[in-house]
Image 1 (cartoon, rainbow, N blue to C red):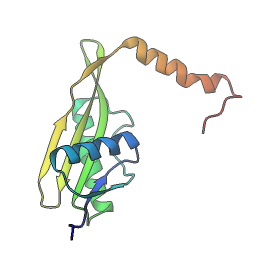
Image 2 (tube, rainbow, N blue to C red):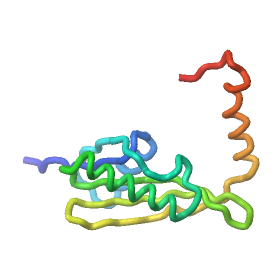
Image 3 (cartoon, rainbow, N blue to C red):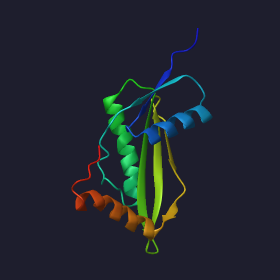
Length: 138
């Protein structure tokens, strides 16, 4: 008889974050898991703009996921953020994992410079449906 799967709550409905959580757990702690997605508040800006705010967002995700799903075995919060360094934007993420035993792990991804042109083009692309009212996105 196999063990019941452990419940991992991913504090987001973002498929990329859930995939990262699944791959991370299977790589380091192989076993049967059931991954649940739950949408929770980060209590930070929609785009965190500092290392500290991004870590706070990931931590808040874990805390709020734990409130939403208190019977899980693990809760994971992944928050992407940007920070300014020498006049350029850096992109990175914080990951926080908590266990029902009360242990918490925190890790920050490597950061990379976000090319200024990428940010400018993203704004232009986002404005297209504003300018052209005939376009709709679902």
